[in-house]
Amino acid sequence: MTGANSTAQQTPACISDAELFMDELLEDPSLAQTREERRRLQLLTAKAEQNCLHCPLLEQCLYDAVVKHEVAGYCAGTTQRQRQLIRHRLNWRVEGENLDIFAGVHSGHQIDHDEVLRLRQANPTDSLESIALRLGCSLSTVKRHLRKERRGESIGRVKLAPVSPSVEQVMAAYQDVMGVREQGRRAA
Ligand code: SF4
Image 1 (cartoon, protein in one colour):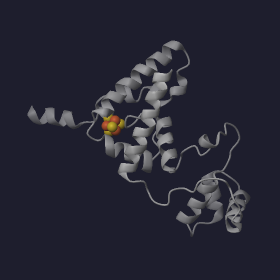
Image 2 (image 1 turned 180 degrees about the vertical axis):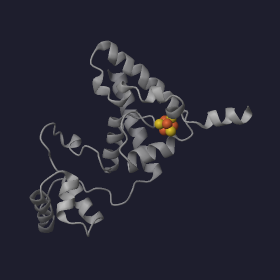
Image 3 (image 1 turned 90 degrees about the vertical axis):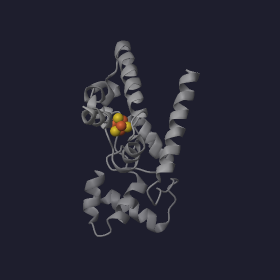
Image 4 (image 1 turned 135 degrees about the horizontal axis):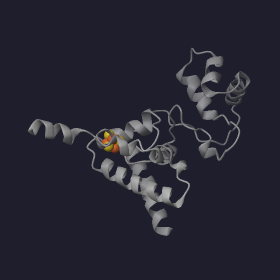
């Protein structure tokens, strides 16, 4: 009995209460269109947040979800949007993230200059075609970005962080983003 209880205590809520974390509104908040749906989303988010805040795995879970993988839906006490904001503060991106969000681009497909360089540096033996494929753009676009860099043309963008952020940096950015959110709530 004791063993079963201690196992249950160690099981993270996202597994023991998978139904909550996999609710379609938490997975995709844009589905909350009506007042009732938005209200329900708020309740679901608050419940998931409480679970995550009491989870012993929170720090590692947040680090992985911010630095290593793009995770859909609610995870580690954060929404997908909040994790993007945390990465933005850390000047960090992960594969699969929408690179256009912080450029304010809502239509078309804008390629991020820093991402082209990062992929090139990370995969020096890959062909430019394969980099273009991964970015979902044409070969000429990749070449154009690399030419710009060789010529030292200014792109007016901040360089990506050269090394992975530390756990402390991620936690500080998390506090920052969640603090901003709380201020926003109070101001609303
Ligand atoms: S912090 Fe991570 S592991 Fe823990 S309940 Fe939340 S999503 Fe699951």
